[in-house]
Length: 299
Image (cartoon, rainbow, N blue to C red; front, top):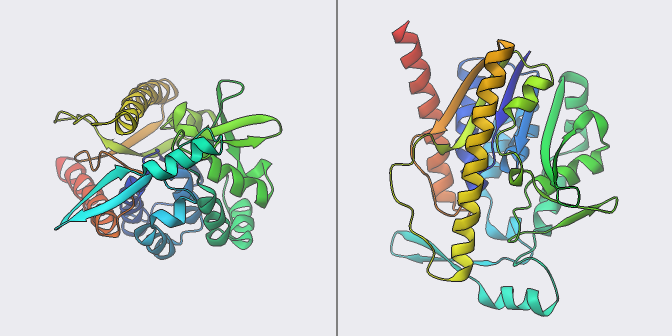
């Protein structure tokens, strides 16, 4: 049973789309199971119905207002350079309203329901072994994996949204009395979960470079420093997920192919730039192609 696993990574999900396009269209790989965390959970439903053109259009055209109903960031341009600063007015307004997060992502929930249809949901349930998204149960302090087989259409759309809620910059969700947020807070790359669910061959896309070759520039104010800190913690979770996944694959005799990004694509993956995401999609496609050609010639 072949599985496709896509990690969290915000706007860097465009890179994973390029990798998946090469594997599915050029290599003709057919997956029985799809697992995603955070941005990966946005990608896998469209990959499961093999609608890559639709996915490309969605991912390369997404803008801040498609994600945030209250955005904690301001995106600016200086010449050809795009940079980000904190929207202190929106953040202050959130404090005044006694909200616990700097921003709100209710616009993303609406967009998920608009772009992932009931017909696509039913098609996946009929034709695929499983589709799973990762969420973090903050009340229980544990990671949970939500299968499309166990959820109604409305419920599954909600779990996709919850899987993407990177707090404290996006919404906290409440379901059945429990509070939930981004699955990446507990599991960034659910390789081991794919193995536990019966995968015998896994292609995993990790939206981070295998080795960090540069020093990160830390934020110059408490908000951006907090973003850097969360990024550091998620990097550690990601590395542990990969180590555990590799060990589980070795013990179970599972073939595991991991596709990293060639470089660190961005310091703030919550900023969505069409120019960058088009570039990253192509980079993902080219990287997967180059890796496959290298494997082929080395045999």
